[in-house]
Amino acid sequence: MPDSMMSFLNSGSFPPPPEEYVPGDILAFRGFTSGARPEEPGAGSLSVENSYLVARAMFIDSDLYNDARFDNAETWLLGDTFELMFQIRGHEDYYEFHSTPEGFRLQLHIPDYRTFRGIPHREKICEAGLEVRNRIRRSENLWESELRIPFSGIGLTEDELNGSRFVLVRQNHTHGKPAPEITATRVFPQTAHTPYLWHRLRCDQSGSR
Image (cartoon, rainbow, N blue to C red; front, top):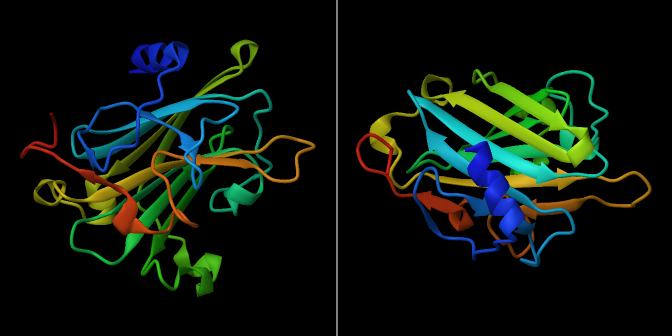
């Protein structure tokens, strides 16, 4: 997958964000409310592998950092993050997972998108077994990141894959800029916390193509 993502980035490809998504397809990151091509591009995918959800991404990043120094900090405020939001079919609740370039993790379980802002951060923290892997090539301004979540950690079954929803999000902070460039694989009126607008998985029984 890294080779195909690199080819995708190098090609300058910028396909429209699909509503239906087949696991493994490569997605472009775009301005999360504008849909615009970002200053620093990214590509991502979601796969299903041996009862794990596996989100992968590759980003161009000229100022790669995050000031988080422990798991479950408010990572999105502190620097660069790669994020997966996932909602099991038929559920109101959903999950949010982050990795920083340094490998610190954030795991949140959010009961309802309508009220999520009113719930204290500490009350949303969960333990779903998130594993993160990162590879940084600073000479190329390149960050590769992988999030792995076991089905058992979020109570997901293979039968529930088809029709479940997700989106990938990136917070791209740069020193000296007042706000990060926020991109996602879907486009939203205001906030990415709108699960009904996320990609909808289209899977066969095994979760593969």
